[in-house]
Length: 324
Image (cartoon, rainbow, N blue to C red; front, side, top):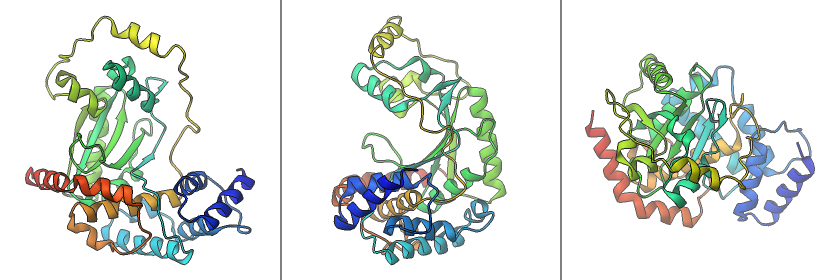
């Protein structure tokens, strides 16, 4: 832990409380840090207050909506106590092992950039299958997030919970379990659905998907279909294009082997605040349980971006709910 850097960032945001870049660096740095109980700034103190309120078994306890809403109120109070008035948008949270497909690191950002430039799907992405989870509303989103913390999966598979900000991709709330084969995806899907029944969670849909959403939007035959064979024929020149592209582009190893941690971090709390504000902006009434006026505001660029999608996102919520 670089305490000198932590102190510099704390000092910077105390002098410039609207410095979004510094705030993001700070909450990211705090996420996996062991904090001392002295010489701390506002953000470090807020994280200590958040973690100090967690009791043994909190992961299972917080699947319950009533306990979530009470805890959320406490987390927002911790931010208010430290006079934290601006939250940077955090759209997604990972837990479990870092994304690894058949022994190779996912490096999803680099592979997606490659696809956007070339329309070529990386070879590794052909092996990537996911359990896609679609909550109907914010309440379901929180339930799914905490449920994912409790799952016992074959490889402690990477899991992600997120709000959807890509305009071309449907449905506002999502979670994924990353798998390296159809067989593993089916196993993880069964585990998730069994846990969903155990915790009596309704209003959540789940299925298997293949690779990133952008791939099947460009190549519909790449999409996974239950009972169908693999109809996608990989063009013969793709492997050569991929090899040439990545010759001089490093594919770094992840900073840590796992994104799981025994606590909730301030970054997690910022994500929760982001989700609640997102829900409010798209007209999701379930956000009222969490207290939409609690906590710091989100930057105007984020607010305007969501407002521009709000009508479509609300329509997608209604569409998903109608599926029963």
